[in-house]
Image (cartoon, rainbow, N blue to C red; front, side, top):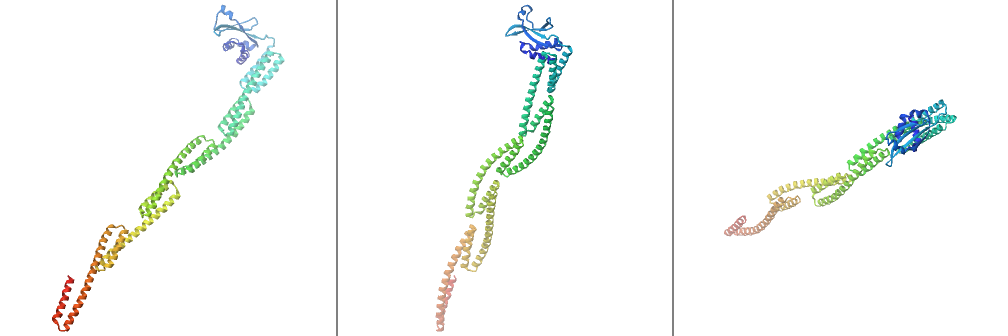
Length: 471
């Protein structure tokens, strides 16, 4: 009955000047039976403002019946700050139909209202058609008009639901195209719910099947996503290894592959995560490029130092520079440079070993020469000792033994002096020899000539020469 009264008030809504809800509730409280048993033909508004002068401006509603049992409801209100009173006359059709027919019509209307309330719109329309046919047979235009209005309301309601269904169907199509499975399932649930509410079993069955299909797709999608997750984990391990080894260009390529997989599977959280990692890798690459440039410049300088020190036989320095280059190459993780400086270091180390071996041999040779020179000096083989001394000085110079160079430079001088002295002594000896040979001949001649005194003088002179030479 509430719906019936609502329908009447909706029909005559333009009649009311205000306080419509209060009037409706007033009718519901006091005249529900009239609306239940009788048919409203008309509601009209009458301006009764003049009566305020006699009865006053009242806030409460009042009512009465006229001689034909029609209802009049009186209400006062302010319209643009002016006091107004309106009387609303609700006119009912005169009873000229059989009560059984009226009951049948009311029962039909109530059933239509119940079906509409339950959103069983198709059944409501069928019932309306049956009730309309009955109204035509009874020739009750008022009912026919009311039934027509109800049918129009149901048609509008059906259109609204159909529009909503159409929107949901379109939304479902878009979500399925974009592989938004969860959203697509929500759309299906809403469609099924609406279909159930309006008793559209065909739609219920159709979208139940679609739901099952989507669920199967979800299972397949889950398997696909799991495989994608596994692939992403493997790629992440590769990316981290490349990042560890400072192979950032390769790490960036792998990171982009991960982002592409995440996008194809709509893994929003992973897309955001790896986009951040990609930015970090790009920044690291810029820093690494700057560092690499600096280290390459340092390598170039060290290279020049290696060449210079090797050329000047400063092998320990050269090895130190080469080891620095090797360390830089390892920092750069450049296999070619690592091999290069490993080779250079090994070559320098071999040269150092050779030099040390040669040095050791020279030291041994030097010791032997020192012993030999002592022997030759003792034997008075001064020329041999002189040659040996010069060799010692030369070896000392090559071995950078300044003390030995100084020592044997002095010895060399001594030997040269000894040689000079020996030379002078030899000359004097030859001279003495000639004198002695001459005196000896003269002494022998004197002896053979029986000149004993002369001979004795000659030999005495020989004695004197020998004593002076020895002294």
